[in-house]
Length: 480
Image 1 (cartoon, rainbow, N blue to C red):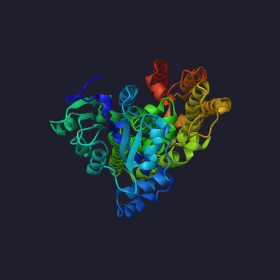
Image 2: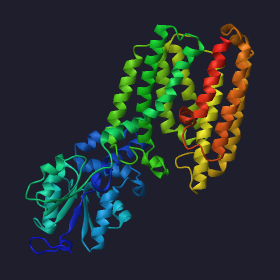
Image 3: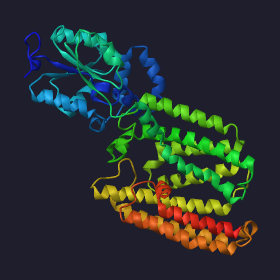
């Protein structure tokens, strides 16, 4: 047991701990606003009126309207481990937070390591100097230690004996008065920028290569104007898609946190704060719209339809069985339609029909793989319209859709459209067995539990898929 300079044992000195950003990797004010906003977007306007009565009023109203499962919140494990060690040594630990009292008490009950809770109430907003005064009144000047994470906590550290700091850099520790020793610094596992890039999911940009499909299908790869337009369309989709991924993650926080792997996503895990995520989404959406404004108006219309459908998917459609995968398949098809508009080409019925059926099948592959994984883990699908026993039905529908897409391909090869574009269309029949092998293999891997990601992204990293694509490309060249 350590002894301080005054001869007081460290366990005799209470430890006060902040909540938002310290124990939590998130902020309950942001969490409650997002939860209340999802239930009623009018909350955004109501906050302006509540703010006129003070921040405590805003926190009270949001807490009353929010639905937050404190068991799913992203906790900072390094801080919790430290608190449990101090608790085991017999130290008095007090949660001192600016969050609304009911939310703070819920967290305290869940964690079970606090002797008392000090929080914002109708008596006032417990932050900064107000928190410092309250703690000093209870424990005395220099007679407590404090764990915090922000500049607002400087006022508390000025009156504390020792400081424990949660920060991403060295700036906060440097601002603490020299007479207050910094006993320990807790740092995040990675920087904000890396987490922000992960939140944008650049690996998903491979899906936007579909914008180039009309360019290739129309045999206009030598048309410089069309190539530049297609590249611009690809960039616009990448920017907009990244923005919509962030929006989707914000609206899907609870479901992601209940998921065995999605809980590690940057926003769900608290690595990217909710306000930062909102700013990131706005920036990417605006940049995507700016690039799209330089292309044909029809392309902008298709991009807008993509955003509207993505938003509808995030808010409602993802929770409706079957409608969710139809929406995902449609989003793929919209990319192809947008690519057609970008180069001012005529839409191809055969291409769109093939795309709809194959992407419907691949969307079902993704859902099937998730259902199998959750069923093996004995868990339900959080925030989805499926049950574990739906896996067999999903398998049947998905594999049937794959076969229909193969039939569309065969009908196209045998039709007049292929004869107009290819001098030897009979060579294209090689594509049918290649495609049947590829899509059957995808479903076989999913049935064996070896499809752990989006099948489109799987294909991007799969050597067999590249080999099949190379053989198919040779067949297309020979048929031209």
